[in-house]
Amino acid sequence: MANLYAEYLPNIKTLAVTTVLQTPRDGTTALWLSNDRKKVILEHADETHRITLPAKVTGQGTQHLQLPNTGELQCVNRISAAPIFDDDEPPALWSASSLNAATNLHCKRCDALLSSNKISVWKDLPSEAWAEMMDLWHCHKPEEPKHTDDDAPAKKGYAAGNKLVAQAGVGLVDVMSFLLSDDDCTVEFRSSENGDNVHEVYCITCDTALGHRDPQTEGIRLQKPYLALSQGGSRTTRSYDPAHWFSCYLNQAIETQGVRKFVFSTLPYEIWVFSTNLAYASLEYPEPKQAMKVLFRTKQGDQDVETLRAANLLIETLTLSPMLEKLLYQVLQRENFKLPDSLKKFMGWEVAVLPVLYKADVKALESATYPWL
Ligand SMILES: [Zn+2]
Ligand SMILES: [Zn+2]
Image 1 (tube, rainbow, N blue to C red):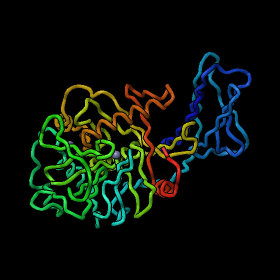
Image 2: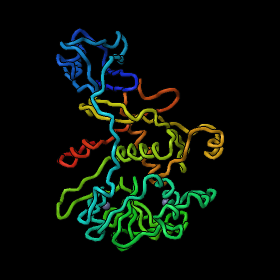
Image 3: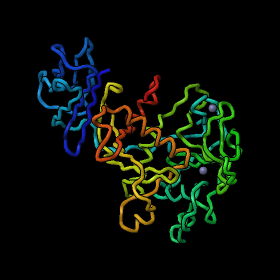
Image 4: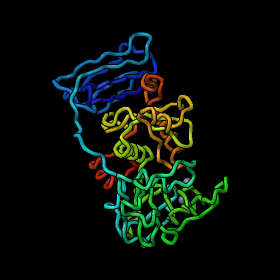
């Protein structure tokens, strides 16, 4: 199938419209901007495709755009344009303020109820400390030098005696997970293969891995990308695509860690969040969305992050659990696959465009009755 992919980079105020044809152009092929300059339309091989532009193009009247040259199947039109989205901070998804005593937790895959009428209070872990807390919670992480007393979580007032402990009735909320006490959720524990005293946590109904039982916090850490939520007695469950979770995570990681390059802790890859504020539309999603561009590749060289940091390179390790690292890599590959061939690679990196949810998107999704990406 033909493809249209329009990407707007606010920093250079340029809209790039990539056109991909499946068969060479002929006398009936045409590509143009609509009369109101809000859409780009492609006619080819008896089919009409249209997408809404993710930026404002000035002027009016239809405007014809360049088609691929004879013998070629792709081309790019660059058009100067203005942003249609405001500079806004994307919110954390499922933060404590959006949850309450009537919030139920479900398995995303099979809808099975995991926790209902147990949690009376939800508390966000302080965002400036979440990376540190992830260290503390991380059960499979290789040994790292101990933190100094200066940055011990106890001093920040949310852990007693240098130890965060799950409490009955309280749901602790982190950007990518919930930490609950054993009694507050119904899941199955199983020892992981390497027998490191960590119990993986599975859905009793469909056997999907949902997270870990965490010996350090004596609680159960459920990963948000594997969950769905419902309210009170409603039978409607809500969840997000993993791509939304990872863009949310990476935005927070950039803010709290002050870097844009990250290595995986359990996989041989590195990523570079190249742009956090692009807007795009494609035949798959013909209405404009905000997104981030993430570059990824096999880790170069064998220096560890401590060495790179010592050399003043701005790079950190992802604070995702091993199961989420795997999922992130799958999502990056999946999103890379969706791009036109000419956009799949950039300076030796693979490219992925991850949609980012802003407040208005979250509101729209709450009232939507159809699956949304
Ligand atoms: Zn773990
Ligand atoms: Zn399930």
